[in-house]
Image 1 (spheres, rainbow, N blue to C red):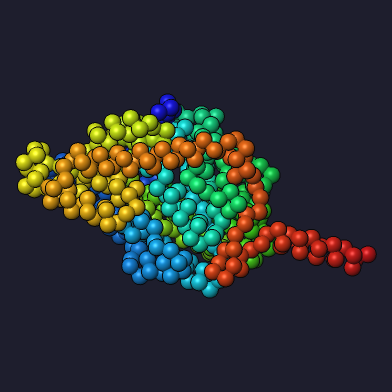
Image 2 (cartoon, rainbow, N blue to C red; image 1 turned 180 degrees about the horizontal axis):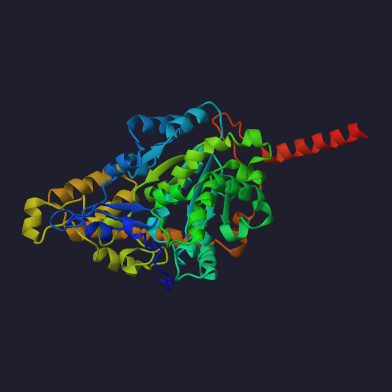
Length: 457
């Protein structure tokens, strides 16, 4: 693997929200899921437990994705739902049903997701939301905006320079492109480039509108910030919110504010990012914008166990997209197993797929549902040994990363520059193909302006 430059990408959360602070009051620890800290709980015996996503649905006040919603996906797209939907790995949403109602009536929407660059290579856990976003883009034929928050990482982490974050952003964007996004329907931007540049004027307007609506107490309540957090951290949620409004991108959606303000946004993201958009959704309608809808994915667990996610700052917990086949084999071989202590016990009791990391990874990366079920049954019955399930996982991850490496070679500086260029995007935007043709709208606006000038003379 090429050397991965990294610093902790999940900076210290204020003491009131950390698992260590909770431990001072009780022997058990509640799970902590915030944009800055992700960890499962600890039970009465001191044993780490896996993240409880059903509990998160209740805590966050979201809705579970059920069988009826999966059927709607298949009906509207004409495609089998993505494996992450079929297996509950994309599990929760806000207002997705409302967005699909609008889509069914011919209202176009756009996708928005992001990446906080903290190392010069993504790991396979980072690809989960992007892989699912690619599926959504292709299935619904809609434009995508990707925000690369180099400034946020700089604000939150005292060990990072802004130059580091910008360099990481460029490298991460090349990785994101290599996942396979369509350049004609995808715009990617780095905050310090776009927001402060000439095309960022409309974006900055929305930052100010959202910033004025958001109080310090709201940010403290949502993120747990205290007096020791810097003022840039308090201001950043307004910027993240602005990215979900179509009016922030007039070069994509046009300049008719009344029409553009009605274009919905769907945000595919890992569930720890949900707090950022609670404030956004609370204030959007006051600004006469549509509240963004969200669809949440679970975390790809760490190689060490299912009580936490992969982290770019911990090379031994993660499989990087720059890892070699040999490194992948070594890491999976040493990963946490749900097998029994001896072969005899394993044959008698079987393995625990709910905590077995190789099986958990197969749920994310193995496409064949029947094969996944065969593996599950064989492992749980003790008919398949730990070494066998690890060998299957190694093969799948090596194939996945190898295919990525080939696509990554094709991402030149010129290719990346085109994704970063503010420009109109091609899309139909709805089942009837009634999406916004920005170039046509701009031509009409220019003709109308010229006609008005001629009438005035």
